[in-house]
Image 1 (spheres, one colour):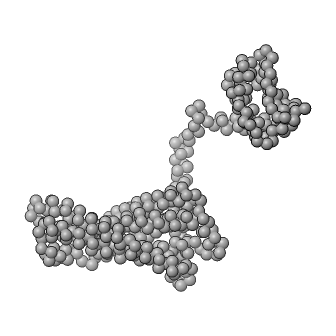
Image 2 (cartoon, one colour):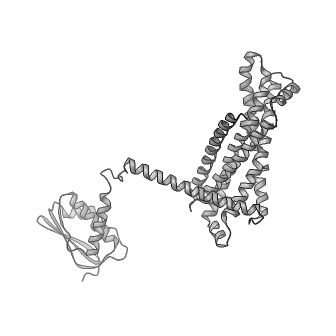
Image 3 (cartoon, helix red, strand yellow):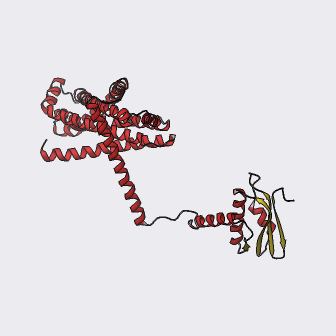
Length: 373
């Protein structure tokens, strides 16, 4: 009798009857609450009739829940006792969820203390996770030192090339420009005192102690650190890291350690190269624009610099290499499983590496100033 499913609405005075009949297990045409409300008109009471209902699913439950909400918003009394108990429980559960939403449709905000607590908890868990990652890397590095490291030597040499020779063009350009800028800016002030020759001191000391290492670190953070995060993040998406674990290989030892070693080896060499390129750029300004003989400029540079100045920048560049490799590999290894997660990991790796470099440089400057180095 009621094999064909449907909803029948009748009105008797100020009372409306919503009759549900048929089987509602399978998906079907969408029921429109607005049409039902229009049919009910200005009734004051509504009751449901389910004697002809054979079975029901989520489609009908959503319709009934929406209709009940709309009727209650009109101050219409609803008699839902005839509805199946399962549907009533679903409607009650939906009402509890809606109660958590305020009038603007947005979830209620946490209190200030709760927000602070959650933020502190998140930071603490992130710190513990990072320390755990560092521990894995240190153990892998220790195995490499004793000759038990397990990673491909061919991949390691490719990483050396990518972190070293492939980065020379961009390092050359940036270092040359920095040397030129420092020489030009310094000359503007030194001309006022007739002391243009001290441009050589300014450029030489700045490149050897600070700018050579820092600019190389920032370049490598945006270039190599981002590449590390993208490579390892893509491996996470493709489940290659899980495959390495299944094969009995330690991902930190196999993927992270060779990248860190390659970057730490090449960073001091790139820093020393950047120092000489920057000094050469300053010399070009001093000889070409300030009419300083190149021999005099060279002797002035040599008199202001010694091995200690160069070692200061070289050691800092090695530390920057560790920071860049840790940031890139950490965010790559902790990447999610989607393309957007890979992009986020790359962004986080670059930002973390640059911030880490600046903080480390500031701390080193304070320490060296205190001990007089």
